[in-house]
Image 1 (cartoon, rainbow over the protein chains, first blue to last red):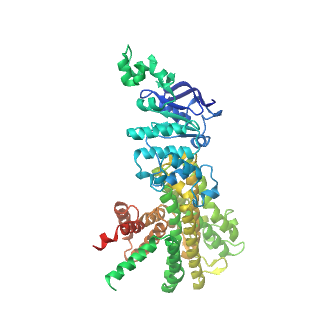
Image 2: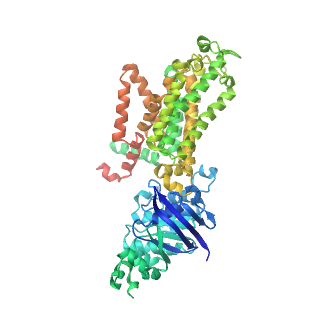
Image 3: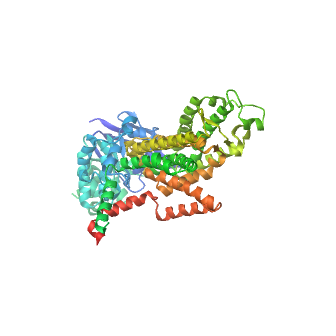
Amino acid sequence: MTDDLVLAGLTVRFDGFTAVDHVDLTVAAGDLRFLIGPNGAGKTTLIDAVSGLVPAEGSALFRGEELLGRAVHRIARAGVGRTFQTATVFEELTVLQNLDIAAGAGRSAWTLLRRRRETPPAVVEAMATVGLTELADTPAGTLAHGQKQWLEIGMLLVQDAHLLMLDEPVAGMSAEEKDETGRLLQRISGDRTVLVVEHDMDFMRSFARSVTVLHAGRILSQGSVADVQGDPKVQEVYLGPGQHTAEEAAIVLGEDVAS
Amino acid sequence: MTAATRVTAATRVTALLRSRYAVGLGFLAAAVLLFAVAPLLLSGFRLGQLGRYLCLAMVAVGIGLAWGRGGMLTLGQGVFFGIGAYLMAMHLSLADAGPGGTPAFMTLISSDGVPWWWEPFRSGTVTVLAILVLPALLATVLGLATFRRRVRGAYFAILSQALAAAFAILLVGNPATTGGSTGLNNFVGFFGFALRDPVNRQMLYFIAAGVLLLMLVVARQLMVSRYGELLVACRDSEERVRFLGYDPATVKTVAFAVAALMAGVGGALFVPIVGIISPNDVGVVPSIALLIGVAIGGRTTLAGPVLGAIVVAWAATTLSEQFPSGWTYAQGLMFMLVVAFLPGGIASLVTLRRRRSATPAVGRTA
């Protein structure tokens, strides 16, 4: 498997406070990587830096191309897409229009100045993938919370992002919506690389292919779900210092620890 | 006519209004009104006044695009309007003075003759090209400079307003070259046609009407195109658009430049129709008056800005003929009422009506 995203010494400082501290991180192509960690660990800041929202030092290579120092829209065109904690779709436009705009960053001026005569195949496919085909002509503002998140993921698909960075995609979702989203992410990864920032441990356990734990801007632990759950350092961060019983760890980090 | 037939007639009309031919029918109705009805009903003087409103409506079409669709609250369209107007006025003054001659107002103030930057506008072709290019070019430079730095909302509004103020001050401060606070006036000819001749004046009105309709076609195409959707997306969530791989600064600059072009052409036609251009027509107050017209008409629609601009300009003329000082209050009051009770402008009444007529007929007849 080739490496899609390679971060080396990635550092983000805000007024002397170091939010992300020399992070070295490699995500393989087709991975479904979860980025977890307590509040303030620097998870969102890390994807902000990769997507060009905040300036950073070090290096962030995507398929061998340096991303740091580029404008946000250039990084997006290089194939890096992201969502935000609060779903941001164009509320006054329909599902179809939202997806069509996402599909069109490479369009010529001539195409832009004409009306949409037919739906691009990528848009049709994405609507089917995220399950919004029947809502094509619904204004995005009237969608349910979960549907908006799916629309955003669909927008990343038609945008032809090869690295999808999702910031807490299941926050506020019902259990069914979470399962739906998890299966969607599993379907998408493989062809594409998915990096998910998440607080929801159940969701992480059920769907992660690999996990990175951040703490205070540094990488604390990495590996499979079981590796991370069994790591004493991770237990310490989540449960506080000292010895912990298997039961305690199980409550916070999941049943696998107890076994 | 019985109540029943009246109901069916009304339903038929609303059905027609809702159909896909509605826009085409609207254009046709506007063309018939402007080209046949108005010239038959109005005296030469009133037709000239209507021509003046149409020039202001051209600016309004641009504002509707930039502000209504693009979210750029521009309080400085008077600048682009003024550039178009002054370019035209300079050419007309030079043409009246004859080849190599000096416009009369200049000889009154100084003996320096025609300044170098006036000279190119002796040529009608250069003038027309400059009218089409300069306002749009200035808007492009301004747009890229401000939107790239993510200046928007109230900051952009203040910036554009300051520009209008500076432009008016610059004009007033240079009486020898711009006519100062009196501006430029007393034009005799327009590209070889005598402006005193009623036939030529009517032709000018027809040109203004034709240009306005053309602008509406352009604006409509921009609104329904993919670009139009992208512009609305930039208005509603600029950050998101950036993460989709577009540069919102470019998207917004295009709309801003088109708005400036429309304002410039409106200004250029204003000059021969009205016969005068002065700093009073291009500064902060007229710029805001244009914006108020657009807000009252309905800024996000196609026809709203045009109707709003015409109604406000007409009301301004009529009311200030009756009550010279009362108009400003009336304008302020109208603006407040629209903002408070009808944020979508007058055009939103049509949408409301459509929505109501979409509810089951049983409920209404009962």
